[in-house]
Image (tube, rainbow, N blue to C red; front, top):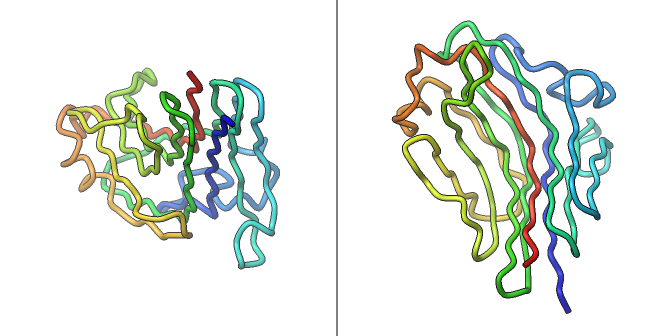
Length: 184
């Protein structure tokens, strides 16, 4: 039996000045967010039953059978990197097939004026064989469990962990909720 399962759930994303549109998902997902899905078994939904609180959350899911991904993303202009980012997420990734892998991540990508990626931070969970690794332009923060966890950090401080990125060149951030599988 070959099974791959990935899901990402997120309650809300906020910054000090709320640069993220509809970061609490209280409006329909077409407000502020772009969806992209590749491969079968993908789902992106918003609802009130994913977390014990009564607010809306979003569910990003990629399942068994095919290589692909489900992503929900948004680009936000920021006046400075000295802003705080906070969110709650429940990340889960699992596979039971040798040579296949699954990954679930909240990705914060640092962009210049032309939307060129300078680097990224991935808060993630993955299965064995996932190729995501730390590099000068990528900081991997692996979560310890698949429970709901709160994440809070300052973008400027986080860029110390992404040495290839010059904070003076960052004018935008791209937030992506990513559920991805590779089924060999």
